[in-house]
Each structure stands twice: as C-alpha cells, then as structure tokens.
Image (cartoon, rainbow, N blue to C red):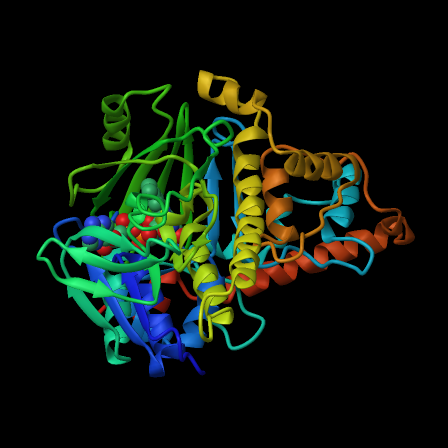
Length: 496
Ligand code: FAD
C-alpha cells in the first residue's frame, strides 16, 4: 500500500480501542507507517467491556490470532448468547442466541411456521429450535469443524489489551507512556498536528486516532465535533462494576438480569466473574444501586465496586478532519448487547478500507461517517426495543421506557412484526432477523399472522417439520461436552 502523505499515525489512548487499532493497523497495513500509541498508566482504562459477539472471530482470523492462544492469555470463556431475565415480566426469561433458529424458506422465515404451530398447539417454545440456546442452558460447548454452534467470547479486558499490545509491538507499533497535556491544531485547516505530553515531549502525526475513552480528548475537547444525546430513549447513565470469585463452573452465556431501574450483568471468565449494574440515576441513588449489586453477586469480592458515569449517544462525526474516534470517544449506546467492542472493530476495518493514500479526502470522511452512523442507529434501535417492549410497569423507570417515544424506524419494525410476522435485515446492519425475532418474541410481541405459504403444508407435515428441527437441535447440543471440559482441553488459562 502506498501511503506517501500519511506516514505517522498517532493513537491517543491504550484501552481496548487503542490496542485493537494499533494491532490491526500495524499488522495489516503498517509496513510503511510509523505508529505511536500514547497512554497514561495514571489515568488507566475504563476497565469493563468483557462480553463480545461473533464477528470478533472474523477480525481475529484477519489478524491471524490463534483462538487457543488468545483464550488462554485472556482467561476467556465461550459465549452462545445472552439470557434476559425479568425483562418482559418479573420471573420470566428468554434467550438471545447467536446463529439461526429453525429453518427458513425462500418466502418467509421459520417464525411463520412456528407461529402456525403455536396456533395449533403443536409447537414448543421458540428456543427449542435453537441449538445454541439448548447448549447454553445445558452448559455445553465445543468448537466443531462444521455445522457447529455460533459463538463469541467473554474475556478479561485488561488482559486482552495486553495481548493486543504484544501483537502491535511485534509489528512495529511504539508505545509512549505519558499524559497528554494539550493538542495542537493547524490554524488554517484545523487539522491536528501534534500532541504534547505533560513531560513536554511533542508527538506529531499525520493521522490521529482518538481512543481516549469518554474524555474524547481529540474529537471533542479539541475539534468540538458535537454529540447526539440519546438519554431520552436510553435513559441509563451509570454503572457499578465489581469482580468476584467464581462459585460454579463458567456458563457459556452472559446473564442480563433486569431490576426496577436498570439491569445487571454477570460475565463468567475462567478466573473470576465480572458483575455490574447499569441503572438510571434519576430513579435510584448510587448508594442504593451499590447495595443492590453487592446483595446480588455470588462469591467473594475481588475488587471494590467501581462507579462509571456515561451519557448514551453518538458523536456527530466519527471521523472529523484528520481524527478518527474509536471506542468510547465515538459514543456509547450501552452495554446490553455487547456491541461496543464490535463497533471499534467496524471502525477499524472501515478505516483500513478507506485508508488515505496521500491526504485525507472529504468524500472518504463523509462515506465513513454515513456508514458508521447508519450502523450505530440500527444497533440503537435494537437496544431500545428491549426497554420499550415490556409488560413491566412496576416502577417509574419501566413506565417511562414503555411510554417513551421511540424512533420511527424502530416503530415500523415492531408494527411490521406484530401485524405480519415479517422481519427484514437492513443492509449493513449488525443484527440479523434471528436476533430481532428472538428479542421481539422474548419481550412479548406475538405476530398476528403467518405467511400463507405455511398453509401449503398439511398439519402432519408441519408437525414433522417442527419435530425434526427440534430433535436435530437437541441432538447437536447434547453431543457436546461440558463447557468447562472443553475449556480444559482446548484453551485452559495459563494463569490459573
Ligand atoms: P478506555 O478503556 O477508557 O481507554 C482510554 C485510554 O485513553 C486509556 O488508556 C487512558 O489512559 C487513555 N487516556 C485518556 N486520557 C488521556 C490523556 N490525557 N493522556 C494519555 N492517555 C489518556 N463493550 C463490549 O463490547 N462489551 C461489553 O460487555 C461492554 N460492557 C461495558 C460496560 C460498561 C459499564 C461500560 C461503560 C462499557 C462497556 N463496554 C462494553 C464498552 C467497552 O468497555 C469499551 O468499548 C472498551 O473498553 C473500549 O474503551 P476505550 O478504549 O474506548 O476507552
């Protein structure tokens, strides 16, 4: 790749975003680039972000990361999806699994066949047609050579950054310790020219990547890019995170447990469990939230609860002048579906695809921003769905979520599914039909109709069709070893 004009890439910040960017740029296009990452041990990282989604496997493949090595180095476990507990009603659960459920036909998705099955009393719970869900609840897992289960990882965020740092440094990226005290810009163009550290050292560059987390030191504090605030549809603004010892073998899924004013995550690693409470401070104090978190975790505390404040929303431009924001500096939807690390990955891959040859082209910048915004808006709608479609009315928080005005794009999807059972994936959106369907059904929307093609099957054929899928899903799940056994053989941590 010819990068005559863009020689020096400066990455500000060394959390997950910074090191993912450094490793990817260095490994994939770094041969003729000078890459420097600046981070401050005094400031540290946000220290959360441990659940991922399946596309991370694609990035790892691109980077040549070996799964066993990576998992052993980050105390990682496997993740088949997320269990949503108490979201639709208190004491009711559903599962959002990765992969597909049942079998679609050319005209319509499996949910249409299933819906008729429910009407006739011959279909089981939707989850019974998903091998990932069955395996998850039976605590089973294996990576199979083909026709296996779809999965992602739970990982230790600080070990992941360390793992990527090694990789970035092996490929020539340099790390500079120090606090950035000021950012210089060109008077005429407004482009960033250099960063000055507290020590007085100046780091100049051609392209700057802002990975400074919620501080957004370059993209906002320097370039004043602006932020679209989504608090009115995603009202949670606080989180408390704490690590505990494990009291059982790690389960292969994330637990998301709804409370009166937010929800709690439980993420099992090989070495410990990550717990956190996400809540809306309008309805509960930090102190009450902390009491609730501590009362509901299992195992011994390994850390003190850590308070994190945030504002849900998106930076108006992810790329402004010669600065690209990745990670929390570009915005934060909220961690409910583990989409933040994925958006870092998408930003990196897009940047590599549009990497400037000589100088930054405004058409690239506009395209990058349009694609990122489109992707983030669709994820936002998916997350808002979980809060808005619920039967819960037991607290002011849930009454607000249920009655709030939602984006038209989301309202349309809900109406379409409720009235016709149809779901269409928007081009380039992250979540596919199976994700939307599982969450819409799980949150309590039952379609009023099914596609007429289903009636071309006799009742006997429909029974056989549903039964066959159910049995195959069960068989696939049951042949798997336990999650813990598979970890022991495949990727046991080197630190335990
Ligand atoms: P940070 O980790 O905050 O890193 C910022 C870096 O910038 C640090 O190295 C810091 O030292 C440096 N820095 C800042 N200012 C300066 C300065 N002046 N000088 C020098 N260096 C500086 N994502 C998921 O995908 N899955 C999840 O399960 C998930 N859960 C989350 C739960 C919560 C409560 C929150 C808040 C986020 C969660 N996320 C999750 C998001 C995820 O944590 C982040 O996307 C990810 O950690 C990347 O963060 P970052 O690198 O952008 O920022």
